[in-house]
Length: 184
Image (cartoon, rainbow, N blue to C red; front, side):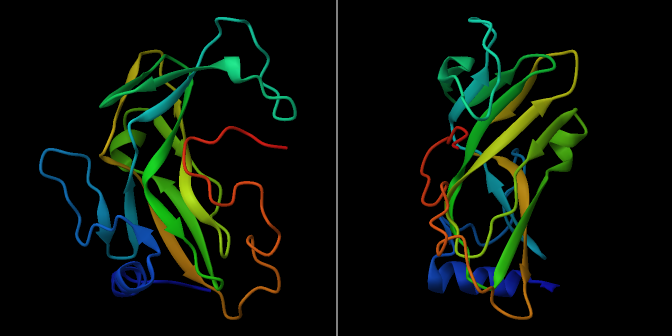
């Protein structure tokens, strides 16, 4: 398995719609950078957020998720309470090729502020807006900026295509378009 370069990411995005909208160079004029990089793509977070709230003293249960555990916010910034958690989504819509696995890492700008970004791998033939998980590990409120870079996706090509892709399995998160909560 080898990592794929900017030229491949650009070609797959412009000719096959792998990333849409696609930004053909890293942008950073007064913003947290986003766009294609040497061996990855820095995606932006959209302006839709779900902030964990303890208003109803809910229990977080992935098998029986209570939608009242979140407060919805839309706007150019999101404030994550201390030692708390927020869900967002990418601006970009991804369509992953059958012989590719995508790994996501947080941006150093956020990591150096105690904000951790988590995303599970994007499996072969998965598509959708990526739900992003932001954890504020600090005892202070933390700010996330919409329409700016949030994380970097790295693309790895397998030596052979998989026998069964995410699309073949009809995965439960296939084609998601908003901030998607846990499904069983």
